[in-house]
Image (cartoon, rainbow, N blue to C red; front, side):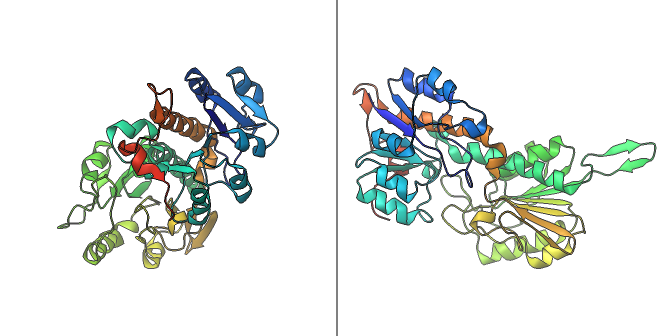
Length: 366
């Protein structure tokens, strides 16, 4: 019987968890033992008894859990102390960045630990139930709009009253991936007039299907990778995009930035000049702030005011929806572990002929 363990994240920066009572039941039904640190989900209102009732065993310390577990589920890369407690040749699964987590991942690799980062998951139909980037980005796009509207301090939809008509807010979404599309849908539900832009031509149909206007950079190639991600634009495209946005940005009340390029710094799309051209009271929410930001003046966990324009961005916006994010993340992890499990062998099997396994496995020094 394989032993799966998980410990609390650093709650000062991460409130999500990797295992919920619902996924404990799925694991135990598949003949896994589940080990958790006491008060594992207490900050989300999940009691230890809820975990015990589904068959989990709880220990006083993270060290005990890690030393006893053969498979470890995490959100972020383990700390130095946690790395010291992880068994050699065990399996570690989570959302790890080969760039920012490089030093710690290399230490883990030297301990012959098989590391799986779901950030590297291929975009294929069979992997959809494991797609943490999509499940978490979906919530981030939604929350970004909610946070921005709260800060905006004005009504969003058109309202006709005896005292006069309130015009609807105008929202521009930059980047129409999962987060961007959810931001569009949320802003539309709130009654805003929404427009969006993306380097991928396939996004036009998706944006318009949500009732938004697609701002297209004319006479440019489709900047999309074979896996469906955006790729870096050339200088010609950047000039044309800047010209398009220069006229559009100043007409909008709210801008939601979501443009990211896997493994690279976020593209700078909103210049200082563009920010200063916006009306006082307008807001930019930069979801790409941790990767350098799409907008000038954006800083993580700060609200910078430039000529009356607020530029915002959170280091971890998912902490604002930690329970919902955890429920989805835990299901993604459960599906991934299930894919590792070989029913014939009745054991976990790292089959590198499986694209999902081979693409997410980090077992060579970075």
